[in-house]
Length: 241
Image (tube, rainbow, N blue to C red):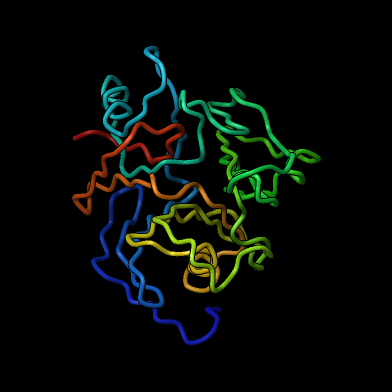
């Protein structure tokens, strides 16, 4: 059930084949969401033979050899200056970067942080819980902070915070069959962004990916954000044609 009197207005609903991307307004702020199902081909991408992809265009170039392309994509977690992932990163079942469970500076270290896992279900799992009982993930990326934890907002997110940025993240349904990726189209604070997932989208767990550099590739909406090179990328894969 959606909570409270919500100002949620759906605009421009578009089916992108393997992702249903649309623009929405929640409490006066503009967002774009992309809804995917467990039956979709959802993957994480980081590196090819020439190093880190760094862009949606380079991922598409890599997929072309197999007659594939991205249905949608966005940046999927924080990264170092060399584009290496910060924290756990698993691609095609191979761990490329280790889990980090200590607290620390910045948004990543604002515990609890978490892991987005793609396996037999979609999961967003708090990082220390992941360490003690890690699910089998074909793909996984760690980021932080958590936004929604079993239906509750991260306790350190402040409703009146004046720290506002473009932000993006992912939330999952309680049964793990649905993941919704969201990006703000204007600067919002953490509390507002977390409430988008819980109150507007009805998702029980959600994880912050990044802010300020947040970008989206949604060809069904004629959107291909540019900017600085990025680290991990998440997206759906569809036939090219």
